[in-house]
Image (cartoon, rainbow, N blue to C red; front, side, top):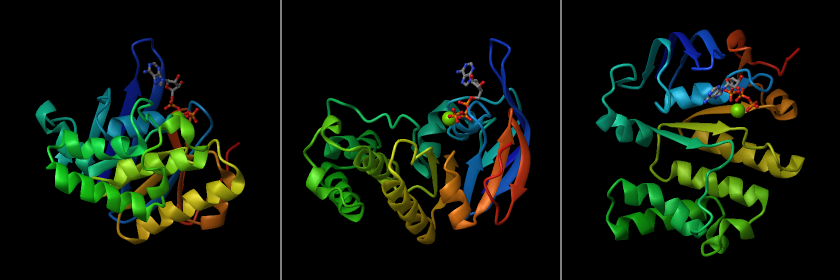
Amino acid sequence: MIKLDKVSKKFGNGGIALSEVTLSIDRGEFVFFVGRTGSGKTTLFRLLIREFFPSEGSIIVGDFDLGNLPNYKIPHLRRKVGVVFQNLKLLSDRTIFENIVLPLEVSGFKDRDAHKRTEEIMQELGLSEHRDKFPIQLSGGELQRAAIARALVLSPEILLADEPTGNLDPKTGEEILDLLMDINKKGTTVIMATHNDVMVNKFAKRVISLEKGKIIKDQKKGKYEIS
Ligand SMILES: Nc1ncnc2c1ncn2[C@@H]1O[C@H](COP(=O)(O)OP(=O)(O)OP(=O)(O)O)[C@@H](O)[C@H]1O
Ligand SMILES: [Mg+2]
């Protein structure tokens, strides 16, 4: 479902964020991306939603060959791939409901259908009581849930979660992980970038370790092993 072949990403300033990354991820997998800060995890996510073009190599996501994907098809790709960004990117001047409904509105859903789906996903993620609050009125864990709800509202086949437990206490972090595992059990492919060694070691899922933009390990029931 996701295939990268010798993907490199260099930036204009000469920095190399990724170097010859080759990997494939099957439908329905749960994968942790680990690696020190600056090792290329977020860059990889941004390549997968075509925020960036690779400098070299090819990227296939489902039926999309991202090297040849015309710009007008990018919204189709982004329906398939939901993202929870490292800094969440919730809009501060919109309520939680308005944030979560937004991808549906942009995709042209009728108001009635969009509202129904938004209420449904908010209920599923325990956000209904926060419906009309603004992001500033929510805790870190609640905000993370809201960002996950927004990423899932279009029912993507793949969910990318970038450091979703970063600023949370251990218990809330575990709740977020349980939520991501549930989403995965229902069939969504989940890729999570993280520094959370406790969670990685607890769940014994596939672990892909990056170091300075290169894959140094790819283990089936992996552990968090960063030197
Ligand atoms: N837009 C950009 N322009 C120039 N350099 C960039 C850009 N984005 C990322 N980089 C560089 O690419 C490298 C990889 O960054 P990236 O954000 O992918 O790391 P990361 O693994 O997500 O780190 P963290 O764990 O801190 O989130 C870093 O050296 C970073 O400075
Ligand atoms: Mg990052």
